[in-house]
Amino acid sequence: MATVELRDLAKSFGTAAAVDRVSLHVPSGAFVTLLGPSGCGKTTTLRAIAGLVEPDSGAILLGGEDVTRAPIHRRDIGMVFQSHALFPHMTVAANVGFGLRMRGIGGADRDARVREALALVRLEAFGDRFPAQLSGGQQQRVALARALVIRPRVLLLDEPFGALDRKLREAMQQELRELTRRLGATAIFVTHDQEEAMILSDSVAVMNAGRIEQVDDPAGVFERPRTRFVADFMGMGNVLAVEAGATGSMRHGGIELRADADAAAPPRHVAIRAERVALRPATGAPPEPNAAEGTLLDAVYHGSLTTGRVRLDAAPSTTMLAREASATQDAAGWRVGARVRLSWTASAVRMLED
Amino acid sequence: MTALHRLVVALVAAFILAPIVVVVAVSLTDSPIPEFPPRGLTLRWYAHALSEDVFTTSALNSLWLATAATALATPLALAAAYGLVRGRFRGRDAIQTLLLAPLVVPSLVIGLAILLAFSGMGVRDVGARLVGAHVLITFPYMVRTILASLARLDPAVEEAARTLGASALRCFVLVTLPLVRPGVVAGMLFAFIVSFDNVSLSLFLTNARTNTLPIAILNYVEYNFDPSVAAISTMLVAFSLGAALLVERLVGLRRVVGG
Image (cartoon, rainbow over all chains, first blue to last red; front, side, top):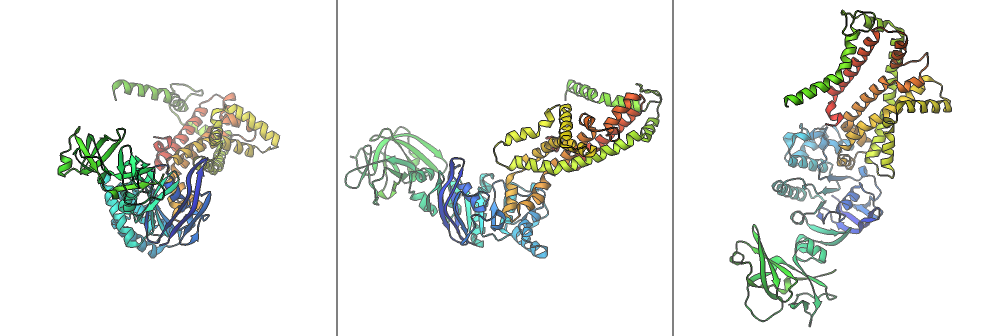
């Protein structure tokens, strides 16, 4: 499979910039996810790679070849749509064989490759059925086989599991992950679901307002967001406005924060992941950096985790979140209205760009 | 269904079907003038109608005209409907409204306008005039039914075909066309019936030598008053009904009318 390179890709619809100078390098065999809220430009970027949207400027290279102005049907890409987009008037085998037929591959050769592709998605026995006779998950697997059978230079997936229920979605994610790893397929996946992005990807590009804000491995975007938007979108929980304090520290209201990294410029915001904030009974000890006392406003149980919301004494307009495993003694003992002490390590404090 | 509901449905059906029942009954009467209820039972008016040259030649004219108009309107309507659904351009809604205008404008007005236009353009041939006019009035019906089919077609299906290597033309032939076929077939049938039954346009465009069946019937009843008109009308009804049943068998009328 091929590398994919986007250079300063831009596309506007009317006056609204859907994609705003996006550059991205996808190595051969990598699984990259474009992650962002709806309207962030992720789908437009994907459709531009497919040729379904013509960019205003910039370049798209597949395996080093400039395909920016190449017609859709000459790009050798495999695309999977959210609506699966199977041909309802053709059998499963004819659907999968369509791309081969377009390439003039027929007869026994085509039949063998169709069988092989259907075996990949464990639907060998379904070749004679019509799409309407399959379940949602099966239809999406046919769509996947149809895209893979042509041995595309890149596999593009536009929220392919968005219409499936949670359990099926998780099974399909697992299957897609194994399949692309096994085939060494270069894949670009679009989703708004950060969990899905992290499960599947070698690398995640978080998009906002037509731009890529950060490209990193899943742990990178999750633990070390670079911007306020990424911190917020990745569910850090606590994004605090800060001012420069004494000797390299930062202040939020009356709370002193220290990070273990140096920022080039003093940041205006920091993020602290809620899971990395410890919530304990108040001690009344004197103020110290990276700790604050306050009142537990409520504790929201969401299964394996419980989230506490705390109003801070030293910054009364701020509520901070602390999240712990529901099964631990501490979370089980959280009492709403109690006086509590929050603390976190310097390594948990992420300084953000605006 | 409640009893009242059923009664209302029966009354409405009777109201709609009564004229047809009367015509069919009259066509079988054994008296020299149309009479209801029919007196006696005979098929001789059918024989009479089929032996009249004015009916048979004009019926052939009408068949030929409806076929030609449908054949010409089909590709035009397909192209128009496709452009309206998939295209993104200024004035699309206005064009859509304009294309359907012949459904709204009184057809006598259209007939007069076409007559004036053809005279101005120097189109003298009656056949050409009739085909041109009938393409115009059948076109909106076809656009409508094809639009309805296309609107239900997920654009991603066509996009999938394109990404898999189909050129725009192959995508249209292999994917789009088979999927909108019910709408196209229904549109063709409507177009055929609309053309075959048309009086108001043909009235302006036919002459003494070249006639369509509805005009021939109209002329015939001006000078004759025998049940052969009822016989020919019954055959017309049977013909239209047969066509509708054919579509029902082929594509399902429900899907076409928009159930």
